[in-house]
Length: 250
Ligand code: PEP
Image (cartoon, helix red, strand yellow):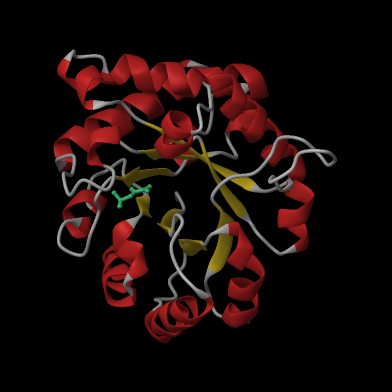
């Protein structure tokens, strides 16, 4: 059985006070179901606070990025050892905002996934096409290139510990969502490609959808055969909406 993951990417939002209120809301109603992981990824400066506020609640914590470097003169960065120290279990990597705004390349993302696997944390590798690429019929090729860059770096066996998030760039934060059929097509293609690359456990890999998933469209997306959860931005900042998505995944 594949793990279902509902992950909130809070991006650069929140204050101590708003985070406390959000977590109060989430922990009051988070479903506890075998095979379902509920994950929140706050800004790094709030990771300790979030971990402390969660206590024993059935919600795990992840980061939105990490350095591939172990330590040293890298002002403004943080390491995997630090994330381990804080009890983080997941790291979002290669988010389209990191790729476009911070110029992270496939090679940078591969380095980070490699380091994250070595540290024993679970990378959530984000892949997805722009609108221009979709309109040019390049979606599957773009996503394949992004996935292959990491597979080539870490090897197909280690890649079995990666979680993929398919996030069409045109759907992130725009209110536009891939149709369930569009998303399913890409998810199935990723799984088939990994199986074709020699991954024996491709059917066990969790592939999340991200891109304006919300309380209204989650159930239909999550009902698709190869959609194993969601990476949720805007809708993860409202406890009620996030919980509705968790319930749809449960
Ligand atoms: C995201 O940031 O990963 C995301 C999917 O954002 P949103 O849900 O707001 O589109």
